[in-house]
Amino acid sequence: MSNRLNSTPNDLRAFWMPFTANRQYKKEPRLFVGAKDMHYTTHDGRQVLDGTAGLWCVNAGHCRPKITEAIREQAGELDYAPAFQLGHPKAFELANRLIDLAPDNMAHVLYTNSGSESVETALKVALAYQRVKGQGSRTRLIGRERGYHGVNFGGISVGGIVSNRKMFGTLLTGVDHMPHTHQPGKNAFSKGMPEHGGDLADELERIVTLHDASTIAAVIVEPVAGSTGVLIPPKGYLQRLRELCTKHGILLIFDEVITGFGRLGAPFAAQYFDVKPDIITTAKGLTNGVIPMGAVFVTAEIHDAFMTGPEHMIEFFHGYTYSGNPIASAAALGTLDTYKEEGLLTRAAEIAPYWEEKLHSLRDCPNVIDIRNLGLIGAIELKPIDGEPTKRAFNAFLNAYNDGLLIRTTGDIIALSPPLIITTEQIDELFDKLRKVLMNNI
Image: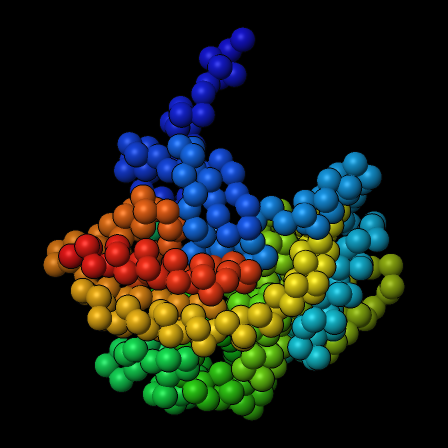
């Protein structure tokens, strides 16, 4: 038997871990070996309360029976079916059920394997749509500072997080960025949507004036910016973006990889804010994080624009080997069943006031300079340590983990997004533990 096969789980050398301080981690590894409902089990037998739904994705909690059984049954029935020129029933069933949940202007679904791929797909759809409509000059894409749209070239081009961009050259050309909406001087400690900053949407008019609307294909934004540290849209901001995109013939893409599937208390943020984009990107909560899968929703107008020419010809040259994979489709259907039976797509609306109260109770903790929330999302921004940015939040992450709580940090911001099954008692436990961490994290 080779040394490779003899390798034990604590041989950590080969795996170059994503978005991880690899050298620090491998000196003091943190391994999960089990999970159930609201908790992970560590390699040393401790229970850790999941304050982040894994990575914003385990909306229904861990190891839920309907999802597990759906995967098991599908794996024994049909493991894989080609996605090009062939299909299988569950991919069509899932698409129909997704459209039933989506805003009423959404009519068709394209499948992907991740949020990053959903964004790439949406950008390609937008560019191709403008071309098939005879507007081939519309090639420019507009993102936003501090936006996160995955890690592929299109996503980091329209995204606006410097650390994700700076090592990779010029990226896509013809991309511009609106300013972010974070105004701590005016909106610190806002509960829900901030009062100030809705007028920042008018920066799109400035960009249109600079480039002309005839060159702009699409604007992409997260309704709530998640990975940058939970930036809540100011009142009126998203509505104004919709007005401007409609005025100038620009497609509006909502990146709902985080906000989709109940995070705000409605199936999608588009419904929560009552704003109808032209394209919606999703992933994460689609399968409860169990199997990689994403979906992109488009309007009938966009879809139908491609349905021209000979019927035997491919209308849109795009797709993935695993688009609508049978086992992933089964996992998604099991997830939707779980959401429906337990009312999880609207549960955040019921528990959000309690969540908000407990989150903002941490305002008096040392080094807390802002707290933000909407639905079942929260952020606590910490004062950076002089000369050591990100270290204060990272120390909080390690201390919370050691005390049985999983939080997420980005820069010096703690982000929280627990599974939608969290109880008020578990919310109490989460914030009691976090208060203890913050009081000692000086």
